[in-house]
Image (cartoon, rainbow, N blue to C red; front, side, top):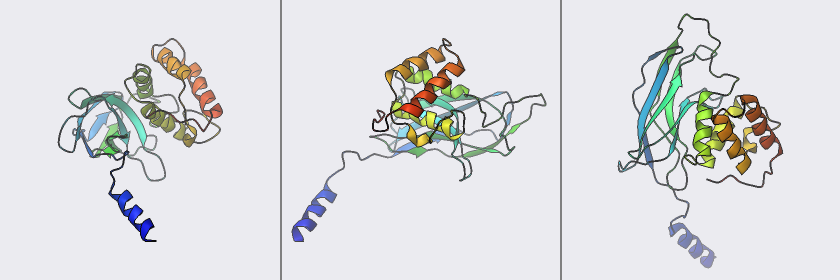
Length: 226
């Protein structure tokens, strides 16, 4: 019993290879009103706890939804060499007419853990023009095409792109036989297809079919790269 206790103490005293450090994510103040159809700009900075910029990381702009629903992604950006990011979103009202609660999210990794920014409430006001654009929409959003280009070019990680795909599954934009947890592997052919789609060489429908095929037929024992 003493030997087991001693081993446990020694193990607890060792630093974990997978330990993550704290990061700070700041989202600049978002206006309390936006106009439907106008471009909204989200900006901010990602640093470590000491204030050193963290470059080349994917940042998601999301709406903080009620507990019964997953938060929905509205835009994606990548931090520059100074840890700063800018993301753009064409404002659209929510399908239930409620205010948005915007925040920025860094999903973390081996070096820095999951981090989210301040949250700002804002309302998207109608432009008094007929529009069918609502959030969530049942069509592939613009941010996912941006993410596909970044992923194809090696600018964001597999885990970032997988996170985006899961969000589309959660909101029924990508149809699957299972749940969003079924994503486990992103093959090279999908990276190529993502690039073709982002460049307009294949249609939305063709790329959606590729994603649905992958998710419904992949081997769950293979894991995506981080």
